[in-house]
Image 1 (cartoon, rainbow, N blue to C red):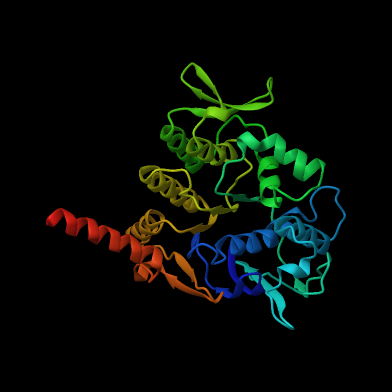
Image 2 (cartoon, rainbow, N blue to C red; image 1 turned 180 degrees about the vertical axis):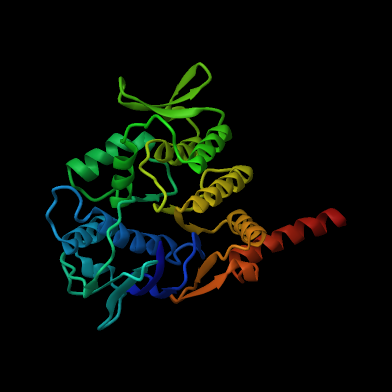
Length: 339
């Protein structure tokens, strides 16, 4: 697992330090606080590390890292993702649970080449994946054409990586127990299954004996189907790392809590999660899981100055406007009903 990280002057992120990370880690904050930026910063580093040295590709890690940063943040030059201000320098350090570390930095004049100051990260065979708020199944061919074939800005590397992961065929045979349980729960949530139809080269939604176009299928179903597919095609394994941006998007409250339960099950198998959310339901459900299982879930809260603070859900709900506003609305409703 990723054990620690330290980011400085990374776009809207002034300073973010994460220590003693857990199997589930939560980033909360208002819109534009930098939650997605933070997810992508960590994802870019670990994904570049996983892709380097695989197969017959002889490029060194610095080339993978530079390429991943460029296509993830899609800036004209990498120096553009450094926080604004004279003399500021972007810095990132990250360590895994075996104490191996990565350290790199870049300045505002950096174009496309990043050379790490230190990198002895141990090899990873497992895959990381980034799940964005919107589903990608109905956009698969468009994303492949734009990002892979034409190499144009639009869909960033997180989308392209996800589409390529989804193209792996489903694997038959025995799967990990937690993966089987999770897939059953996921498919029960929408009473069917989403599959790729090789004949039409399109995704379809199957419910009983009926088949439906993915274009007419609900957003929430498609979103859940993405995780189901990655578990079924074995792209995800124990020791994978999953980054989820707004898991609550397109899901009703019951589905949100069911999804968080599945995330907890998968985390017990060894998968590590980084979740960015501004949903009270997500935060509250994770708090209940933390208390029930005595599980330390780090929670990071960002402010308008780009400085983030780390707390633990075992210590209770963090002081945050998302939570405060949710409680205020509840009390307002309760007060109205009492009158």
